[in-house]
Amino acid sequence: MNASWDSQRIARTVLVIAIVLLSVWTLWHFLAALAWAGVLAIASWPLRQALVRRGMGNTAVASLLTLVLAVVLVVPLIWLGIRAGHESGAVMEWVKDVREHGLGTPGWLPGIPYIGNSLATWWQTNLAQPGAAQALLGRGETTGIFSLTRTVGVQVASRLTILVFTVLTLFFLYRDGPSVMEQAQAIAERLFGPPGGRLGKDAISAVRGTVNGLVLVGLAEGLVLGIAYAVAGLHHVVLLGLATGVLATVPFGAPLIFIGCALFLLATAKTTAAIALVVFGMLVVLVADHLVRPLLIGSTTRLPFLWVLLGIFGGLETFGLLGLFLGPAIISILLAIWRDGTEKPAV
Image 1 (tube, helix red, strand yellow):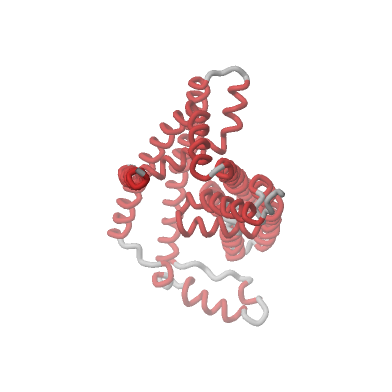
Image 2 (cartoon, helix red, strand yellow; image 1 turned 135 degrees about the horizontal axis):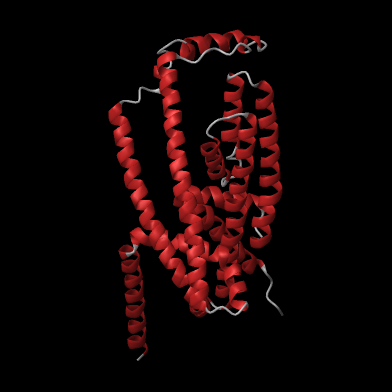
């Protein structure tokens, strides 16, 4: 009897694992959409709960929030895409002009102590002469541009498909989320005992804290530094602000943009603006990365800042952009298991 029961349990376990793997294989190309929907739902869940407490039904709340998030996501993306496309074209025209006519040597460059003459000579050789920047900036053949255009078109179509399924999944998560969470918690406690439900809550808190600490803070950095770019007299501030906001989701990523902008200002003899931009940018990064971001992420996940960074960069390396949120969630679960294992049992 026991042998028969064990064989049935093993067969049932194998069948469940096989069905799960087959389901993952079937949904493989839509897992990103499901994951993004989960991240957005977790991040905005307090708003959903607040609307429910005001008396709105689950379907009404799901419809309203899905519509709002769809507008918030789609409209800015389309606008930013159009603006970035126009400004990218202008940047390519500038690069083409530099290739053909060169970029004049700044008058202040030879005055830099010790290395000024060497830098001026290098600039004159590689950038100032017409056609001298070809090797440095690349030739940009028409075939390469067409190939890049086709690749971008395919990627845009793929991202739009993911976005559509993300919005569709969001509606059902908002509507049926409470029952789904109850079922997931019941399964976790059945499989892993009482700690299973707590680990799930830790993962949800980690995702919410990461969204607040990375995405919102990163977008705020991009907005503030975008205004600084405009004040400094730079062109294409929308494209620069967008690039800054994207890179700012990774700690210490924003300086890559504003330091590059400061170097460009130096090259155009706007020394005061370049210094002011670097000082202001460093101040923004200092406040965001060392005060606001650890407070938002660490307070919700109870993760030390070192583990936050390891989770972010490890997640990026392993899962791509989704790893920004999955990495800290995984590390949070790991540390929760560690804490459970080190706690002394009650006597």
